[in-house]
Image 1 (cartoon, rainbow, N blue to C red):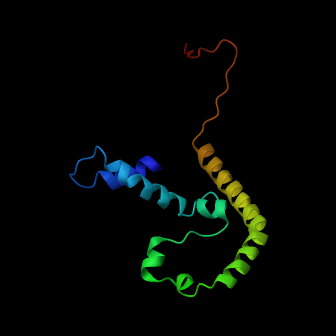
Image 2 (tube, rainbow, N blue to C red):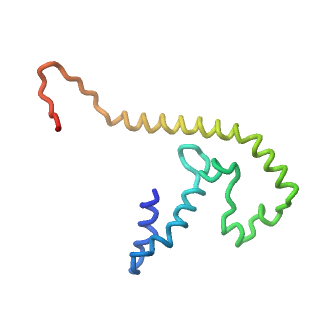
Image 3 (cartoon, helix red, strand yellow):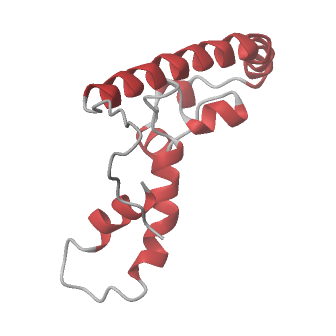
Length: 126
């Protein structure tokens, strides 16, 4: 995922590519950490810190959660988040199991079962 994202950000213009990936890497990693995954339904940032990340665009454009931020309310909110953290982890685990089952079904549609008998010729790689 990191390499694919880097390729799309680096090779879009005719500039020198030698050190451009180094400047773009933090942006790509941040993007990956703040996007919801299909497997869990949550962002990796949320799974680690039990809260959603504040994006630079939220700060720049004055998102409501930035404008109406209150210190006392934040502490209460963090306590509620910690209390519900286990529920979110269980929900993520269920979503991950469902996603894994979908991938398994997709893979098994294209797999053909083979059976071998004694005396059949098979290719053996050394």
